[in-house]
Length: 606
Image (cartoon, rainbow, N blue to C red; front, side, top):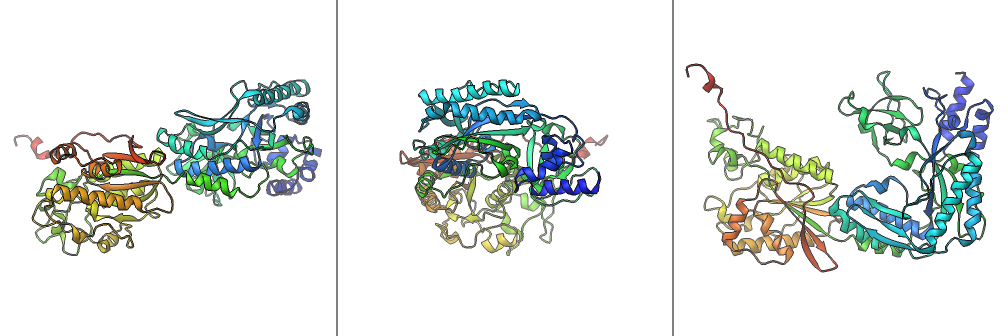
């Protein structure tokens, strides 16, 4: 490629997003390049000369106050309930399925949009009635009554005009017209999403805009990544990355990649190669779509034939409708609905003495008091304690399997999309360790501090000895690498724990502690994680549910059946003024035992 052409491609690549297309595209079009090739500007693209028709679709998009409320819902639903399929695309009503059009006929689509809009402009409803609909995996607004018929007429007219002008087949949307708010979300998020949706007030008049978009049909079912950092290839089969680049990744073609790497195709250059995944983030499906033309209804001025100029080549990662200041009252109404708490109570993982018995410490101690690992299910090391190794006897750590259990539970919580915003643990080492490993799998170990609450410690009657166990101090935990809060003021201090307390004293202690925990308003309202003992799944949830304590005999029988990483999940129902026990966000963890093995038993003659 000549130097002059290379410079021209560089200019287009760098400035296309912020300048109108006419000055930049005309020289390329004059050289004979088709429009779709000139827009992509891929000097090393192996498919540069391939005839790749784009897919087009027409959407009806809200503007003004309604758009602001929907965008606020998008942000809050993603923050509270993690990302779902609706977040992949901007707020819209689909008017037709995606269809193909040859590049030299695209101008005909613009004319078809203008003609269709002009035909129904006078009858387009001032207010589009939106009725909220909710199911187990869908939440959105349905368009009903005569306004839906007018919108369908517009879509049908557009399809007919496209057929005549561009010789393309367009299938207008035949389903119930709808504006999706959430789709394919986790069932336990349904109530939160519904509450967020009820804060939206769709009844006000709104200027609706029909928008024509296109996408590259080669990458429809690919994942889209956005580059966060610049990357210079170290090998010839690697991609060059610049911040903001979009990369298309086929999930079915990643077998040949090493851990931490993916193979994808750059939208900017068209080249395919390996790239480090941690240099990118997940982008939305529609971020790479091209916005072509708009037709706005309900305006005194006819803007139907207005060209989008700069926006015609803009990616819709930027807001498409004009941005106006947010309606403060609508934001406050939305935020008021999310002040609902959830509490997830989790039992700690397998403890080492649970497997190796009360004499476990003698099995792993040298005569001079040093720790060694006699079995793979013993932890690799023990944290340092000021009074030495002997205090671990009544405050045992997790076993290796207990660590694994904690991590796999944390990984499952991450996959579930649950948002942990604060963590409280019993001061027992096994509970603090469990919380640490869960937070590490949630990628929150550096951002959320563990608050140690002695008030949720085990019923001291069940602890051996006439005194309460010597537990690690906050300073010792911090020195051992646990990210504990040094500022948290607990409901009960370590010194207040009394040995051999009565059952009534124990359940009262837990009730006071969980009341204190739930009264603290975190900066980000979400799920409060409490990591405690098996007994905590009962003693820390019944006070929330407004239930009296169980009979102590029934309580003891119940606790014996609670496995490692057993969970109970409570949600606050503000409408009814009470808490409810609901399905935990992840399934239970079940596994079998693995007995000890001595290879010497296999020596012949032994």
